[in-house]
Length: 259
Image (cartoon, rainbow, N blue to C red; front, side):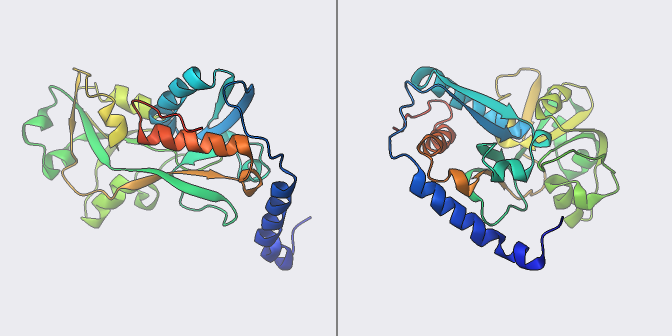
């Protein structure tokens, strides 16, 4: 069976009605995080999992020890899972999102480059030296099962390569990976250049093996967003979780408890 055009047009309105019903029947008791025992399922990109989940988990361990986080990969989840409330939260960068979903920007981030401390390009890290290097491409922003990458398909390569394309330039990509932590490890190779979000790069500030530099060209920043189903909008436990995620984003080193 397939929905008619009329059914598709009514979808957002029906979702809003269901959300209103859910709010009406929602118990009005406050969520007691300190004594709660429950699992929150969060779909998080590798980037969000590496930068945001550690401070969030540290806070939960101190203030809500009965809370368990089940972190799912983008390929584990469909929008239908989120729509039905089977997944509590999405933490990722989104190009498109159903209009009925609620979403908020967690933070904005830029890009930095990681290179080995003895990389020859460090002596004069301009655009010419950048383009002469071998590069690590890393990203997995969408949901669902991924597909192979084509170095010639600049339209699908993302922010870094789109910024270069606007300059009429291309970089030589030596390896494609979907894992930022792998990209960080590859930065220790003698001839590779890794361009990753700055928050991830800053986590390597004390790593004596690599150097952190700004890219020698402008790359537009991006937003990390948090999105959830309208069915969970008024759920007290879910509201509490959203507050803690935003608090962890603001105070990444010292998460703030928001009752």
